[in-house]
Length: 133
Length: 335
Image (cartoon, rainbow over all chains, first blue to last red; front, side, top):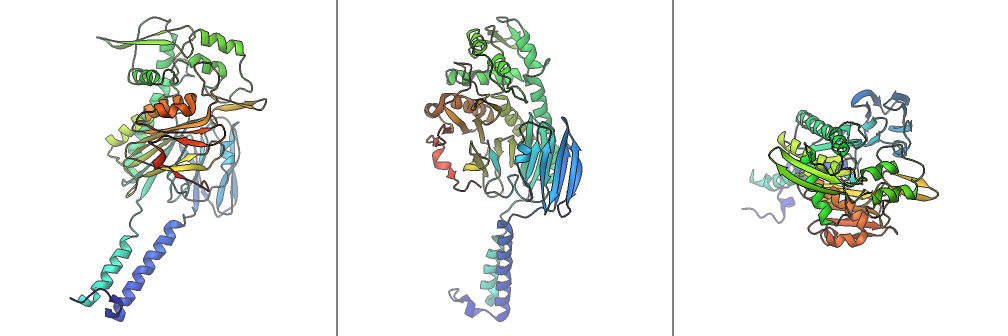
């Protein structure tokens, strides 16, 4: 059997092409994996019902009515956020811009949730799957 | 063909490295007064939708039965009975109360499920929270009347489990354990629907099922004074992680933070630590132990037995016990 210690020299040009293509594909996959994908669309959910499907490439300001009043949602530059909501804590507004697949912000008192569609963990591209608090 | 073998082997190895990321699906719902997220690996979206729907229904039923703010539910009917009288324990109280009392005994009362009237007096049942604490005399009066020290006896009769609670100031409030119980019940429902690899996140309290493809579920533990992660821990299959912190259900008055984690001994917010985290095999007990650990502070770490625990003290310094410390991956940048 031919030794494997010097495989490159043992290969034909076709072998080398196959190998290079395979490694290029693998490296491209890894690059794609480590760069969390940016979501293209987001959903607005009120009391469990999807009330709006937002294209994050189009600027938009949206007002929805939840359990306690209105929530204001803004789309700019491929991202979406709460700008105001009928709650006192304001955690939804402090969540800031959401742009990666899987990112979510919610106004619990008003039962309004915004989530970016697409792959990615619920924690939004961080090094863990969820945050304990 | 033999000359192609090295290239084929190397190419196969390279491509295999790309196949480690599982397909995840996610379902979310408003329940238990928060957003519950269930993400699962290795199942179809349709199966997760069915399983998660059943789990959400179970959680909603538990919330309706145990919501301390409701006028007429299982908990309210129990609390409305005169002190000292035996009363039947319907589900879910029959399944939950004995476990809550076991943690109460094990923690010498640091976790106490009879603080209901005090929590109501402080106004921490549901937002909006008050802008000022109650009068000290009112707090003292309730503590003296048995709030936080209410005696509860259990007995089993032919009709089932019965309980007797004494102390005019005592009222059951299972807020310190009910969310964990709901997580455990939801996990059982998911398993019944054939979902074996999932992470259930009930507003920051979590229970893992199986793992996330080739690796375990990874959970960040939040900084008490920020939104980023202090450390990351990988959950073993079936494990739960629960944190009690002074940043939830709280308000500020004259520069001081007042929060919902009341010390049963004083009837006032405990101030030994900023947060307490417990990791272990059941969310129900992890929930109750995290409350007890928050009340007890750093000294409570040594009493956790087989449970992993961590507190962040008032200076912001984390301290973990020997069970949890080797598993923590500290996060410098918090992301």
